Image (cartoon, rainbow, N blue to C red; front, side, top):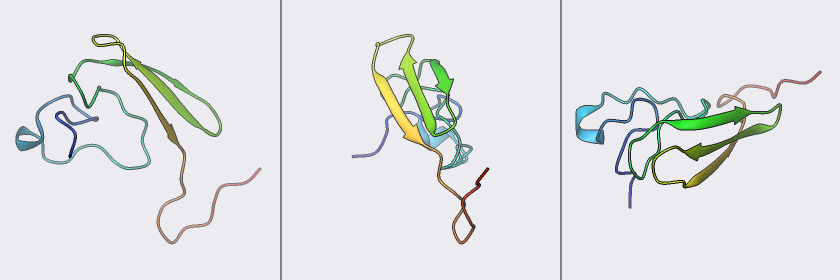
Length: 71
């Protein structure tokens, strides 16, 4: 089952042109479409929905075919 809302703009997928990039932290909740309070760390991110309270996690991944950033 896909997300009910775009994690980049908060709109339903049918109304969104695919604005969320896979490597970006989510800005909107995929469950309710409300804004996430996001904390970005060197290894990833964690976001808590300001509407429904759901918590979402992600990690920074290098682009396909690219080398990971070190240093």
